[in-house]
Image 1 (tube, rainbow, N blue to C red):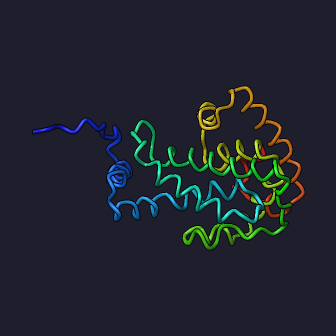
Image 2 (image 1 turned 30 degrees about the vertical axis):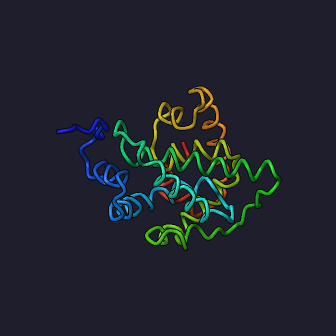
Image 3 (image 1 turned 45 degrees about the vertical axis):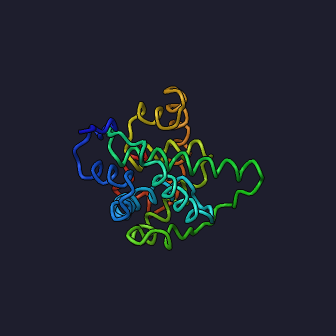
Length: 204
């Protein structure tokens, strides 16, 4: 009997199994994959996009790219980490494209978040703390916003961020240090963020 030479994912978790089934064309698995990753992808994109009015579109583009690329997932990392990398790459590409064309939308002081594209993330988008965080992160440059999102929102290490972004470790450290200084002063001026215990990692 002919043996398939296609490499199975190394990870045995349910996410890897769904990813492998999705890559084989299983429509039900593809829907499950989207459900599994959508909230985390939306969270990633929402912070990267800041107050950009096209954040919903970036979420959709990232999810489409993830579904198109699922055959490349091999299980060396978690499915979530793999999807985050694609979400970051897709969002940053579109943000840079808009910036080059002079089309970046100025930050809305009260951004609405990713509401239509993400059902389960609606509660986060509507909370006062999340909206304020999105607003202050949105004032950073795209490169600093990227490292802040990966480090402080998603919890990646400096080394992991370097791999995800393709930047040198020292560059990641520098961007994060500058971003934290900028955020610290903004947090200090916001009474809600200043008193929130969740902000301890942001205010170091």
